Structures are given as structure tokens and as C-alpha cells.
Length: 387
Ligand SMILES: Cc1cc2nc3c(=O)[nH]c(=O)nc-3n(C[C@H](O)[C@H](O)[C@H](O)COP(=O)(O)OP(=O)(O)OC[C@H]3O[C@@H](n4cnc5c(N)ncnc54)[C@H](O)[C@@H]3O)c2cc1C
Image (cartoon, rainbow, N blue to C red):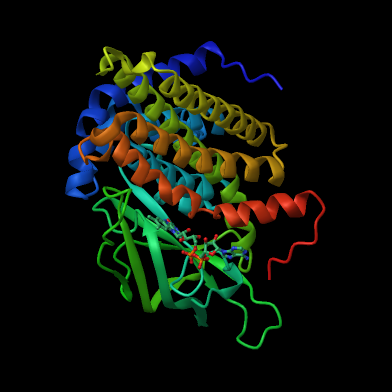
């Protein structure tokens, strides 16, 4: 497969890199310390370079580009600040869900602001008692005439409580309580819907300036028209959404690995030890070479996965391998980066210490490394039980 970027893709990558290094990187430490979603910066990015519009069709105000193009942008954002990249990826993933499965009303009313980067949305799957085990979800939507009443609790939902959150896409069981197999539907729940309470922001190890809350649903009513796709198709839709989300999270991890490499090479050249530069020491050189190999293999897998999603022939195996490798490697690369930075690497104002904290969650969220390993084993023909 040809993974060479086109000139247009190189131009896009350069534009996002320049913006991210000039506008985002200098603020990343402050954002991490303040642990507050930077609404103004998100709006500014989209005014300046329109990142959120990249993968949407032109008829919705987008640039009409693909998942690979969006992944290149996410990679460059994550190189400066993975947390900011994650906010962007979740907002775009929710919009792509509406573009692919939403009704005309969803697309006319809710999509334009996501594409213009004036609003964000969330995807609420995880519950306090069940994350990886999606069959354990218990949030329920009960039909009441032409409306649905939502009850239950969602946990750790990114972008659910910003001041530009437009909607939460909420998964809820719609099959009868005595059904042999539960069926989930996906509801577009507009921000401010009565009966929905966005809980207190979590105090997190990393991704501190991303916006993460529990969502409590206590009889929130939404109409039939707020179901995204068909009733009962929620699992299928989320599964499809994961195709692009896995590419985007792989790009988040890849960008962070590249950022660690950038910082480590610069530090190794600058720092003096034993009468020479740190980078002149062979064990430091070995660490940098290892980081570069892990970053480049991540790049190949991430780009291959994204290009195949665009071509419509991505396999579960390739997506799982990309997600697993990029995310696992990014922790290893960040750890090596801290080692190269010595004591300074342990300080909060050293970028790579933030990178190490931030990327830890990529091995847990969006299908943990263990779940990706199970998918890989299953795709290789082993008897894997997901129930
Ligand atoms: C900052 C942050 C943002 C998030 N954003 C979102 C969001 O926007 N939307 C959303 O829906 N969720 C979100 N999540 C939730 C995230 O997707 C879940 O935390 C993740 O899916 C893991 O679920 P869990 O926490 O319930 O862990 P569990 O599923 O309880 O897993 C615990 C451990 O057991 C392992 N494990 C589980 N099952 C198996 C198995 N069968 N075999 C082997 N090992 C297994 C897991 O890999 C993990 O290591 C977010 C989480 C965080 C921390």
C-alpha cells in the first residue's frame, strides 16, 4: 500500500503543525495546570485553520477530505498537546456519526456547528459498572407515547459539559426488559434537556484540560426523531464510529510519541554531561533510536489503518493493531523521554512528564489494550469470548 502523502496532505499537515506549535504548545503547561477546557482556543483553532471541518462533506460545510487527512491534523495537535487533540477528535467523531447515520434534521440542526468548530458533542457509552463489557450497560430508554424516557448513568464522558457542548450521543437499551438479547439505540440528547444532569468534572491524572463528566439521566424525555439511525442499531453505529475513532486515537498517540522524540532530541543535543552533549552518550543514542523506531512503526500502522478506512476496506485486525501499537508504544516512548530528561523530566513544567501522564489513558479508553488483543486473537482465528 502506498503511504506517501500527497502535496495537499503535506500542506495540511504543515498548516496544522505551524498553528499547533505557535498557538497550542506554549499554552499546554498552563492548560494542564488549570485543568479546564479551553473553549476560546478551540474556537480560535477552527476560525484560524478549520480543523474540525476536515473530514466532512462539502454539503455540510466541510472540506470533503478523509479520515487520513483528519488523522494527520490530530497527530500534529497531539504532538503539541494530546489533550487538546482528544477534544477535537471526539467532537469530529460525533459529527461523523451524525453525517453517516443521522436524519436530515440532525444534519441540518446539529451538524453545521460541529463542522464549523463552534460546538462539540460527546459519545456516551461507558457506565460506572461497565466499560469494556458493553453487554453490561443498563441505561434504558422506555417508550412513552411518541417519546422516550431515559434513565441511568454514564461515566467518564469526554466533551459532555463544556460551554459549547451541543449534544451528547447517548447509548441506551430500548429492547423490552424480558428480551433474550438486549438492543441498544443511540439518542441525540441536546444539551440542557430536562432530566439530564452533567455531574462534577473528574480530577484526572492526565488529559486534565479535556472535559470529562458523569451524566445522570432521570426520566429525561426525547422524541422518536432523536434516535440516530434505526431503533436497536446503537451497537452497530458505535462499532462503525469506532473505525474512525480508533484511527484518531492512534494518531493522538503517534503525535505524542513524535512530540516526545522532538523534545528528547533537542534536550540531548543541548544538555551537557561528562564534558560532552548528552546526545553523544551511546545509551542516550540507543534510547532515542528506540523511540524513533516505535514512533515510525506507529506511523505506518496508523496511516495504513486510516487510508484503509478511507478506501472502505479496513479490517478489524488492522484497526486493532494500529490502536494497540500506537497507544502502547506512546507510553514506552514517553517513559524513555522522561528518562532522557533526567530529574527535569519528573517536573510538571517539563513537557514530557505531561506527555507520560496524558498518554496513559490511551491504553484504557476506546477499547483497552486487552480488548484490542482479544480482537486481534479472534481475527487470527482463536476462540475468543466477548460475552
Ligand atoms: C479521561 C477519560 C475519557 C473517557 N471518555 C469517554 C467517552 O467520551 N465516552 C465513553 O463512552 N467512555 C469514555 N471513557 C471510558 C473508557 O472508554 C473506559 O474507561 C474504558 O472503556 C474501560 O472501561 P472501564 O473503565 O469500565 O474498565 P473495565 O472495563 O472495568 O476494565 C478494567 C481492566 O480490565 C481489563 N479487561 C476488561 N475486560 C477484559 C477481558 N475480557 N479480558 C481481559 N481484560 C479485560 C481492561 O482492559 C482494564 O485493564 C473515558 C475514560 C477516561 C478515563
